[in-house]
Length: 231
Image (spheres, rainbow, N blue to C red):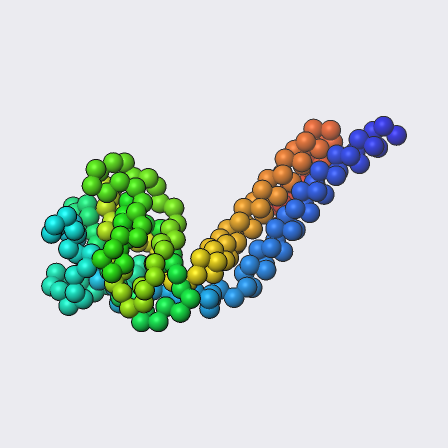
């Protein structure tokens, strides 16, 4: 009777782990079937301009932050394409005109920036991440929600980016939206990876449970190996 209870208790481990794996599979299926287009946010992939290096200053102000759209020296680019002709430059400027009607959009979402940078709207700095002029080690590459401020419709948004490494620039498409809408977009875009991580964790727990049970009953390991071979 004691041996039977031990076998029943040992069998619960794989059952629980398989339950977690099933739950993760269901979550993964839901995430895969969910609509990928977020109508509450607006992608900003096109109509950007770039130039390498750093801006000259006039009376302490970075002139590239507010240059006219038709100023010379800027090259058109669509993001997230990598700008050409870097030639060892550590600085990159990107800019774009914001839509004439931002509606409720209050923030610019930058999924990945290499590496430290400043953001300007209408020539006014609205955001900074890490040290720019001191040349310190990069702070990392988290996502950013850049506040646009009032009266941003139709204004120029400019990004001053610096990096001492191979990667320099923006790796994914920026988006416009409210802070809440962009937060939902961030959660939705990472839901699939989260569900996959839960699935792998469930499979790891199931494998560990099988190994624990096999110590008491080697036939369990034999049957599991046979089943994996058949699959």
